[in-house]
Length: 243
Image (cartoon, rainbow, N blue to C red):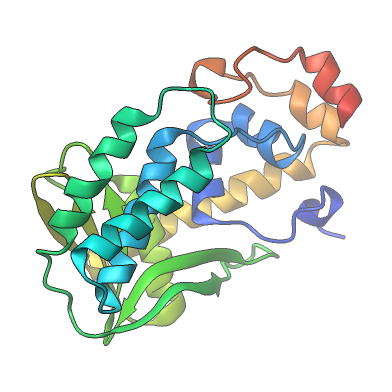
């Protein structure tokens, strides 16, 4: 049994490796202790805009696409006690901006599952591509400010898709006022893949040196300021007992 299997981990993902790279203590809480954050309005807005874009690409009119996006957001936010109106108000202008985008071709698939193995990591890295077109796969990122260059964690995500599918890949950023395309080239892909591989190996080595979940959780600090939920800190002793 390899080190991942000992902890019940059957696969990795670009987001899990990005979390391990940026906040390993939070990675342990999420993937070892099973303490999930509850999501937030910005995440729900991102999903809603993707649903709106999907509706547009499938031939729906703008009004129907906005309605589908709002429905997606409202379903995710229905149990939230926070004020989510600011993020909800961004959806219509973002979907309207999506309607101005010239897609590479007709849409072939959405949320396509892919997997990729890094030698000698014993489990796959699995991801889901937002939009697949003829010859290129695109991930959509809604944001309040359009970046001048793609974010490194997004590049890592698309690079994995490129490696898994052997196709071109890119990012589509959309705000309420503009949109921007970035294609991820071979050099950026190869650099990102090396980073992902190094992170997967470091995670493998960390788990191999931990005798138990308790040992792993106690070995890394947690930056609670970047943890969305629960709103109050849970004592580590309670997490360990619950696990």
